[in-house]
Image (tube, rainbow, N blue to C red; front, side):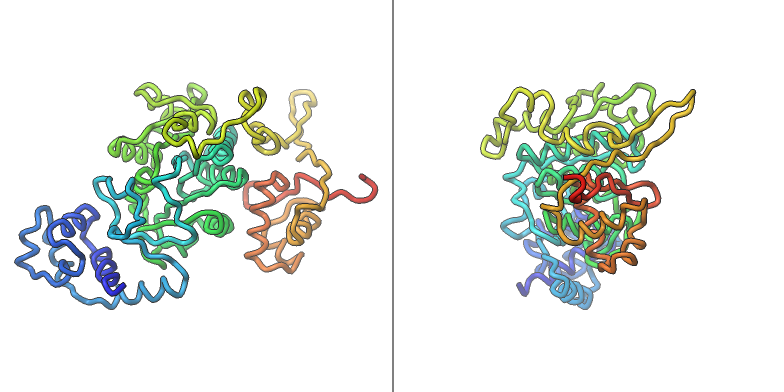
Length: 411
């Protein structure tokens, strides 16, 4: 482990890009030998800029030691390019990160049907439904969802996969201990529990806009293929797709309505040869021959036509729990259609939250005050209630019960 500080030193040289770090490793063999090299030796490495050479002449190990200590305190694993379980898929791209920080359980990516699900942060109801459906079907049938953790389609894909009981991985453009966006802090905890949060940036690193395009190569690099759900022609999603094409990954796209700005990206990809998909099962079928031991196909004709039990609850279609009635030309929102459910299978926290939501919409902060449950537990319970279809989240982070707890009168 003594060599770890040199990996951390090299990975934190400001001005040394990932592909330049790779050239240094090819030239010197190890980060330790690169550390002890001098200016003349650095001049012999092809492609190093003057800024990179200057950064390499800074031999202080103070930051490396500080990062090492912080990771130990937080329980964050440090994975280097030299480790045996560093994923081959990622190692073989043009510019693999030489260090990864992992919170949670690192999957054996090279054995997984890992698929990146990406799309707009401001999707339509159709896009949200499709991302959730794809995530759930991938998880149900043996796949693994890789995504960012942005609001919008990243969130919906992860929720769907969690509902399907599958492993999930989020690649971040900040430290694995930094919640960005803050509204998704509840989702961070669930991803870390059921999969892994991964970043090439040390703990404590705050997000910068230019981190995310760089981050995208890791999302595609860990995956067999990338599916674009909804996106514009100039978007982060298309940036990820370009990275995937450079890495020789499969490209999938979800057909959308012609004329919608959010359909422009997928339609362009379909015109260029991407495979059209209407759910996660379409993607799984592409890899069935290569990963026969991982795939779990539906057993009945009905399941094959309708997909897994994802067709029940909040993934039936865009906003299925909303009921409206037409009065003249006006549509009146009657709120969620509330079914009665038993308390069995719910935790005490989930029961208390559903009871607190019986009187209407509330924010997470209001629920903390009402129930006196710690905020972390409230957020975690809300996540699982949403995944189960028992709670709906509205704009402004207001939550509403989609079900009511059964009492003796409803038995």
